[in-house]
Length: 194
Length: 360
Image (cartoon, rainbow over all chains, first blue to last red; front, side, top):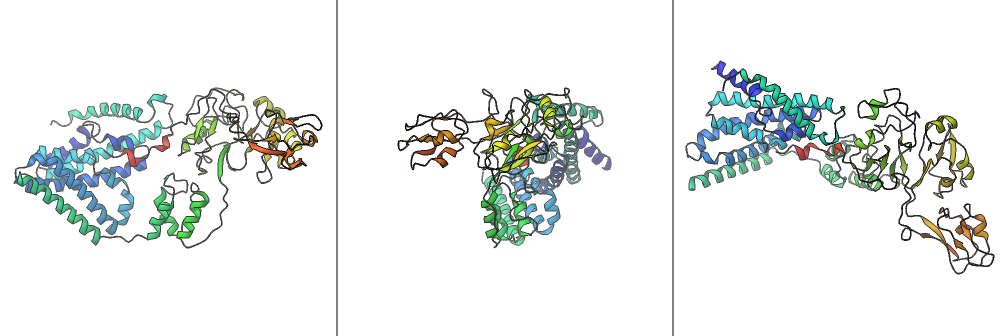
């Protein structure tokens, strides 16, 4: 059990990194990684939201969708669920944990409709994970996302001072760098067989 | 079919109910003044006030941390609105400030010491022997100020000197700080004549380094009828309070370092009541007025520099007036960019905000 969970973490963080292998969530990846501080804020918000979304998604799937045999409605239901959940968490957090609310700031509502969150929840259901596997997956995926943001934001802070050909400035050079980074991450693919 | 509708509808209703209840139960009281101030602000979210955006600034004002006049973009009108929301009255001058670049030494006019190949940033370039311009006071032309402008109010001329689009400049001062040579200054909008050079080198040195630099020749100081120009440390400075924008100093400057920002000039016109006394022709500093004694005089518009001295001195009522020539002469008196240069504003990187780009 423990070995399996460890494998899930290893797999989601390094081998099947959502950004660098599945190419999901590229919008925040390009959008907020101009400086390290912003991307870390976004990373923390993603960890928070994906964990909550995958756990609650698992419950809804097991006790609502599967018993009523309407699993084809997954996408719609999960979007509804994630949106409502994030809103709820934001409201509660604002009252009860103002410090955390200030730290996550605008990133929390921004991440609501992101494909990384939905992708993680839907993949969990496709793989028919158990509860503990879901929790592990729900932590592993956003940590991998956080790692990717961390690396690219540091690279971009360096790139900002480099002389880059005009047509490649901004998003293009970021995507090229992302491709190279993804190539580097392919080196991890031998670690886990999936 | 029914199960699907019920499930989805039920989930939606449940979520809505939960959110509604949560909003009630976890309601956070926000000072109404914060939203009022936020509404009064320009919402440029530029951060010129030192806070991340307009809302944080509003919060800081209510908390007493930020000054009522903190919003430089909004200017006097917003400062008054903020003050009235806070139940206070303040006195703010109406004067609008505009950024000006105190250097015209572009790649054609100024001599360079070496080819700079380093990082594309003025503050990096200045570390290499103080920059590659022969004039140590000169603009390095790597657009650090332009990149800092959140309003697209600046662009680089094709010759490597920043140009300010006055209509867009909000006076936020964000461009002042990035300049390693302190060349960006805030000048009242009403000052239309500016010495665009701040070389403190002696005249001969300036002349060698840049053909458009102020050589401190004293010509403008002598001609100024209002004593508005002073020579301080080898550079002429126009005092905006005394300057009447007469423009006498502009043609007299041997190096063209005084820039004319008086778009839509008013020029002298002579009308029928003119008795032909020749007083105006005598006082005209540029010999722009022609005409025989006791004959209707004519103003040579190409020579008239809009100083208005003739109108002041004309003894006959209704014989002379300053007339807005913008309809006649459409050509604005801009020295940079050069003719034919495109005046397209450059897209600044600062405009990219996480708000738009982070949504998937």
